[in-house]
Image 1 (cartoon, rainbow, N blue to C red):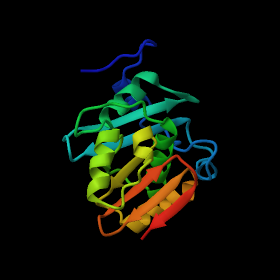
Image 2: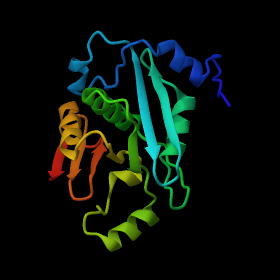
Image 3: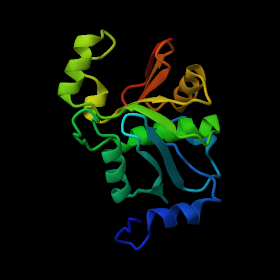
Length: 189
């Protein structure tokens, strides 16, 4: 079923219309913007959830504007899968994720391990692991833990760090990278 926005565009129609256009996937405040000069003014996010089996491949920004209906769809996709709670995610994190994806030049969707985390879920995870922050940006809708089969954790982390759009945590033993839109910082290995 195609979702049609109030301006008459369907998500599928937008994808078709812009399929041949180079993608911009970085917020103006990050270093990635320099890598994307001359590209079309659209941003795309591709994700798969191993937890729910759902996937999303969507353009969420066109010509300087986030698409509210698409942001809601991404928010739902990135919900706390343990209790189905949804949070309004910070779209700046989508920009970091999309910019890193573009810099790696891959078509494979990210596997989303964790997007929004409710306080209850965060407390439960924290009780089991010292690696879970008490005030995690996951609880604020500003973080995602991601994996790619076709790229190493090191490659993903380097791409995310290049974007200078927030925190990048490298979890080599668990095979994922944390990307957030909080203060610029790095950790892990």
